[in-house]
Amino acid sequence: MSFYFANANLKEANILILGIGYDKTSSFISGSRFAPNLIREGAENIETYSPYQRRDLTEIKICDLGNFIFQKEKPEDFIKEVRQVIKDYLKDKKKIVILGGEHTITYPIVMAFQEYYKNLAVIIFDAHSDLRDDFMGEKICHATVAKRILEVVGKENLYQFGIRSLTKDCLKKNPNLFLFEVFKPLKKVISSLKNKKIYLSLDLDVLDMSLLPVVQTPVPGGISFLELVTSFKLLKNLEIVGVDIVEFSPLLNNPLTYASLCAEILREVLLLIK
Image 1 (tube, rainbow, N blue to C red):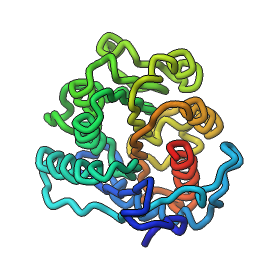
Image 2: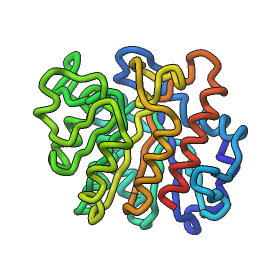
Image 3: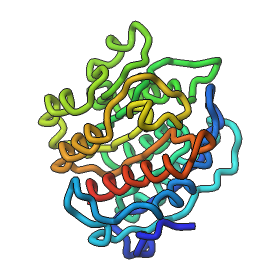
Image 4: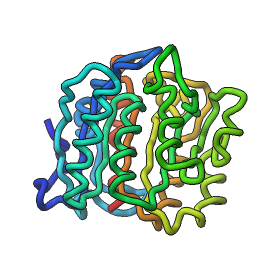
């Protein structure tokens, strides 16, 4: 199954969509491995036109690559596999949107992008800081992903927004960590990002839990859909080279209702990065 708006092959496309349904380290609610295909189904309920950005997906050449089928079970082996497959696609000079899967997938993706784009900054919208050095004996997992990314790009190139679940020392670990909100702090720092290549990681639990409760580690509070898309519009003048959307867990409740919401967010992302 492919997104109905995917209108180009690999050679023709400007933007590639790839599903990576990995949730091996999920510690609370698993099931995000099913998210990529459910979002494809949910997209059947949305228009290609965005009233927020006043643009249409038909203006963009998009290729749906399907899902990456990983061969290894251990996190460290999975990291190597994903890093290599992303590097292979970056050689074609395409922008890539990845659908997870748990947030762990962002680490090897950023490693690949860091090799290709030397002036890379990572922006994360998330409820969780994910800055632990290890969690339940794992160095590579959804709760440590931001710490691993920080080690790759440096703390001056990691920006975290919407955080509302963290340990006491997290604000010391990352000076660019902003609590509760996305739009206001992003607006304050946007000028410092203008000369960088941007990788955006969107953990869907940044949203208000009442809006999207079907995530792997839900946290009360969060931002509205309107704040999310308004924040996207703030990013429109930056050079965004890649995006991931992670942590949708469709086994919970009525999955297609929430899958449509995720698909609408994907539409806004695709239009954002053109």
